[in-house]
Length: 198
Figure 1: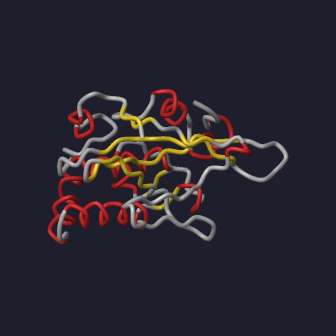
Figure 2: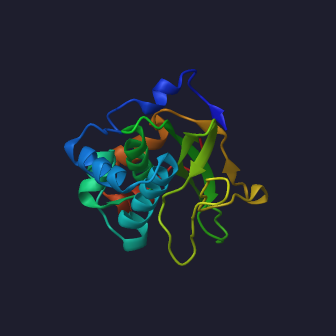
Figure 3: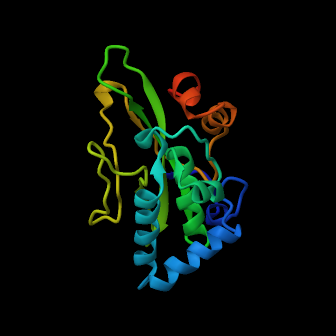
């Protein structure tokens, strides 16, 4: 993975999207931390909370748009672009460096070969960036931590035009977030605004 900022401090910063100083975020952080055995266990618990307790908008056909971490937690729903903000917030609140990274994925096997930009996280743990995808499991998606402390929901197929981007960003990219910010609802986002490539 390619760290895009020179200093890890950028990956523990509270921002408008990754707003871990919000009271609701702080309360959840305290609850998870209290149950955790160590840093690895805290990371695992945060990952599993966002993966399992925050519904993916597409899976439940929810029209609400959530973007910043505190809104995702409040509403209990979000797409990958917003769920990754929540996981970053939970980890950064305990000074665990966490960034945003991306994949270009094919949406379906249909002839139109449409694509989307998928967001996931990278956490800096034991001197290495490790990817965590808290998109949420369903009948065709399953992400769980492996022996390398990574959890990927999707493995890209280069032959199909899919891409694993190496960069780890401290903030979500504007060109990825703007379509979500400009959509009227999630149906509108899926139909007209979703980004297909970086």
